[in-house]
Amino acid sequence: MNKKRLNIVSLLTIIISSSVIFLSSCNDRSTEGMIIFTQVSRDLQDIDYVTGSSWRIFPKSNIAAINTDQSGEKAKIITIDFFSACSPEISYDGKSMLFTAQKKENDIWQIWEMNLTNFNVTQVTFSKEDCIDPAYLPGERLLFSKFITNDTVKTGHSLFTGNLDGSMISQITFNPHAYFASTVLKDGRILTISKQLYPDQKEGKFMILRPNGTKQELFYQGLKGSNVLSRGREMNNGKVYFIESDNKDREGGNIISVKYNRPLHSKDNLSSDIKGDFYDLSSFQEDKLLVSYRSSSDNSYALYEFNEETRVVGNVIYKDDQYNILEVVVVKKQKRPRKLPDDLNMDVNTALLLCQDINFTDNRYVKDTSSISNAVKIEVMGIDSSLGTVDVEKDGSFYLKVLADIPFRIQTINEDGKVVNGPGSWIYLRPNERRGCVGCHEDHEQVPFNRQPLSVKKEPIILPKWKELIKESIH
Image (tube, rainbow, N blue to C red):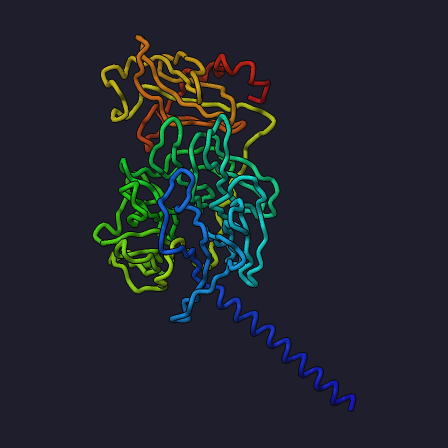
């Protein structure tokens, strides 16, 4: 009798173990290749490119999922316990998802992480201000945009980084811009939509920077009046894909690709001959993208295949006439980006800026081309006032020691005190950062002349208004 009972127990143990293995493998199989997207009511509200409302965050939105191997399947809402949820981003191992959400109506938008195996969620941020647009960084870290208000940034979304457990949250951008829809490229740098808000608003463009906020520079800028609308998606063919609108009042736009190694001069509009609007995209299969598309404003956005080679919208992947299907990601393993070294030194409050020649410029940006060679000074402009004027060397170079994490702009001045060029774009440097430029408003593909600027043969200049604020440092 005991032997019979032992055999039954052993058999049950084998059956249970086999079931667990079977269910686990099924679960893994259903997760890999799963398509996850944000679904929003058909009645889209007016887009606010400053706050991100109805563009980066959507009230009463849901994150849903479908399996591509189950045709005709109804999407499963995986954020059923949230009032609003959007901006899904998949981890490099394909096992987790970051997203932004409101637990209850009128809650602050916070960042959450979901385990895609069991759909359990963990809150990452506990901010008093909205936190949106999360993305994974190497080393169990994340990146996100956070709404802030202060005398330096004024009002807007700055970029922050931190650990996935919510610790070590740190601000990395400090100019009066709004930053949205960030992704991390394979080289470890951040690609983000940056929109100047002060002193005047400008169209969104792609900037690129390191995860510690250093080395920020222009990656891509469209024609005047255009807006970059979606995250940039880097594919394995050396290109970056995104959605761009040629009309700031449009909800959607065209599919654009640029080459990673020459983004400013390789724009390719892949959907110029297609009627309708695109809202978002993701990699899908070889030579195919997964796109959020509608043929007219009377229709809702749905998920379609897009063949890059033929430039044709293909099969519909998922459609629900009650919802707009907007942001989309595919669950799959990806190669982890490089983890870049961090050379910040938070024990100092200064940084160094070198310009090789202020008279080396692109003539398209100069107010008076006849006076280019006469520019002999620079004026450094702060948020509310001038920070001082500096004479440049005979070769047009200057070398400054500046306060870290403080935004400023530069304009060049001739001998008569007239502005030749500028003020340019906002600049900020992180503690211990060293940055150089070829000229002022120069072509961004230019490389420095092979010579030593005269300015670096002397100590860097400190602006008079900053002398009392700059403490002794390692510079």
